[in-house]
Image (cartoon, helix red, strand yellow):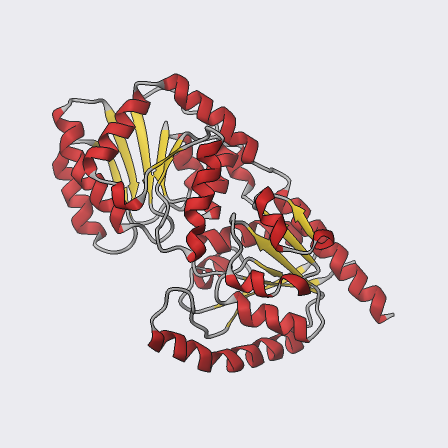
Length: 362
């Protein structure tokens, strides 16, 4: 039987990529999928590029927003919920899948009000505000960490891991060539990582270390940053966005990046050695908690954002470059966090919820 599903959650790649992984499976199984997001979020581009229909809701965020933005969001909320209810009336989904993020709030609330089964994916160690407030209303909560289960009703929560594209699980180990460092501040880049990276270039150059750097720097000032890197004399490239991240992983010996749920999920799936730099302003400091879970397992190293300088980056990378055995231990231990069946399990739960909804109607 074919069902209709509504997917929501967005803003960053960490929200949209897992949702796309589930949506692709649902489409392969013959179901119809609609995405709900904001015009400003990455979902506005990535969902249509993947061949999915997209409808928009206008809503801002509360967390760490100024008073003016919070007031504007509060005024938008009733209108956004109304728009989500109308969207569901047109689409008539059999179940709703939410990855969190501020756009998910109105859609998830509309699902509760319309009594449409709501399945939430909470990929972080600490749930976001939307998922915390809706915890008692979910059909099922799928979580990425064992510790996250305590935030949801016992019979409605399941540890599945984060849905990750299959390509990451098939990433081959790097074979030969110079030691390669992949730097990525996430889908939007990171000023801290960009600054520390540029500060480290003369240190690598003066030490005559055979290193290649691939740096995803974000869309701002890419041309100037790329010119500075070219002038450094180091091997590698600076790009605004990496579309084929599994391919970039296959070229890398070490990853330096943020610790959002999507990023650490991809690192685990590909079995990468990494240095994690948590974004300090993430909601409820969840990126630090994600990174700490990896560090406690011996699966990664962590540098706090305030401590990341070019000198610190140089020292940590050089230490790991000279210790291939530690990198191998990281790769072995980080794979324990990988759950290759996460997307399939999410699709199964959505189908189960949709089937039950159909039965109740009969």
